Image 1 (cartoon, rainbow, N blue to C red):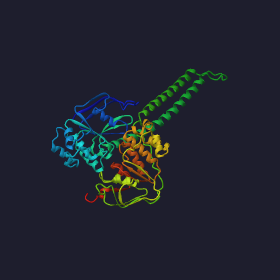
Image 2 (cartoon, rainbow, N blue to C red):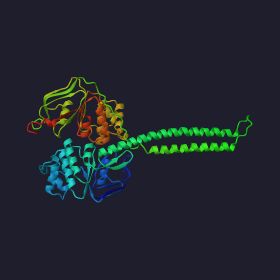
Image 3 (tube, rainbow, N blue to C red):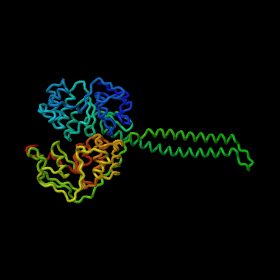
Image 4 (cartoon, helix red, strand yellow):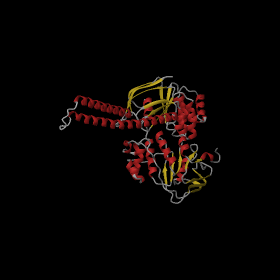
Length: 501
């Protein structure tokens, strides 16, 4: 066990008015399987790059071991074995094979050019190499981006066997499977807790509820004290006025007694004001770290038919003259939320594109009712350069609604006023999703809508989909999201083409 220390770490990007970290001090145990969560833009990837030395800030980072950041660059012409030997120079061939086996990768990948491997194969091979390196602390920045649900499960089980890493991931199921501590970059503070994502979520829910109740109690107390102090002050003023009596009464009031009583009432009013100020100060410490998830609604068009998509003997996505699947027969009924599942390369995205109207080779029948309006959200970021107002004009969506949705998705105001091509991948995805939500459609086709999005946004979108009566067909590898939103499932692994499976 060793301690990684950050002392007064301060960093901000050039041109930005706000600091990402301001005098951050943290002690982390290098044996922890530590996950990081927080909204997009809170500095998760920035922290990893500061630890890895790719960015330089003020303050100190003290660690008795080296940091290895994933992903890292492969060299031109490298085979899988050459990459592993470079990243883990003390590793033995049998160790490489053992790690690949644990990640369900065949040994023959070691002899293939690294650049010829799929994104998921590259990810798992590189991670295996980083964990074989001695005296190193792996920093894993969103390693699930190219992994399907099964591959994420395998990766989670692999990471749960390791000792000591820092993981940035928005996949709640993965975090629950492999971490034992969690670092939370909140709205106003940074905290470290023992446990996984679900235990943190439960603790935060209880803390948020406590703060809401305390806030409501303090508001009532402040209102009561304000009224009582005003009454006491008014009584004091009226009593003070009687010290001089009435000109016509001929009576001489006891001015000393009246002055004493008046001062006593005024002291009481001041005490109430002070209690009110103390309560208001206590109230300021509450609610700062509560993520307010504004409700988002998906309001499309009434379905033109009971069945919106029907496939009969459908094959598509030919590779070397062979279809990706056996003939498919399925229906997508109005109001269903259908998730497409299956291993990478089984044809999920191809089927989405085919239904969206892309001219792709296929055989069999694909029936869509006449006049069907479709909103399609692609997996990759759209090729667009310009402002978000220009983006909205291009797609002919109502700009007020579009920007309202972006605000609810907590896209920063600087990004809303910036250019699409300058945004992060997570910000681009939010823009594309807001565009789709603005489009009045009968059918929504979404290909990995949560890619690069933070956990809070995922939960926000999850609630929207679960409450929606619209028809949605989507590909998404976030297992928790699918479990909580899908009303129907189409598993393409159940339709392997001839010669596969």
